[in-house]
Amino acid sequence: MRVLKSLVIFLAVVGLSGCGSDSGGTAVACTKGITSNWSAVGVNFDMDLRAATIGFTRDYEIAFSNGASCAIEAKLTGQECAGSIVVSDSVWNNDGPSDPGCNLLARTSTFTISGASMVACDLINTTECTSYE
Image 1: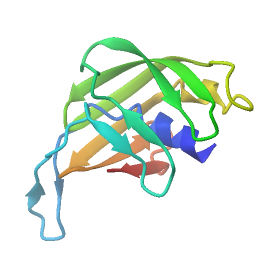
Image 2 (image 1 turned 90 degrees about the vertical axis):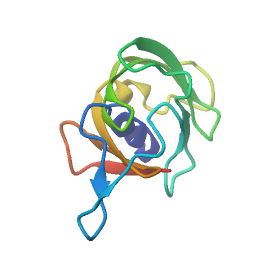
Image 3 (image 1 turned 180 degrees about the vertical axis):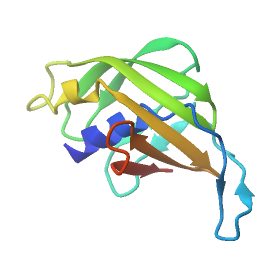
């Protein structure tokens, strides 16, 4: 379920600014945009967004390590280094041992990328964030 929440958080984060800062307050440039392949830190979960186009709704398949997958419809908004991911539909593909909770993916998340690292947070519960590399 944490992996699913992580994806949801990631999928709604494409519209903020595009830079973070280091401990000295200097802006850290975004060197890896949202339309890349991302791996959740500490969770066996990868998302390949290399075929994504910002501003357009597209169908994706999200695969989980247990063999289950979800078919989602998502739109990236914002810019390569900050924005939102709006998932308007998410259904289980009837594979794997059971539904991993695909319906929970239908929500909005925000993301900010600094360097080649991304933090994605749920739009409603902003303390629920996941890091990606």
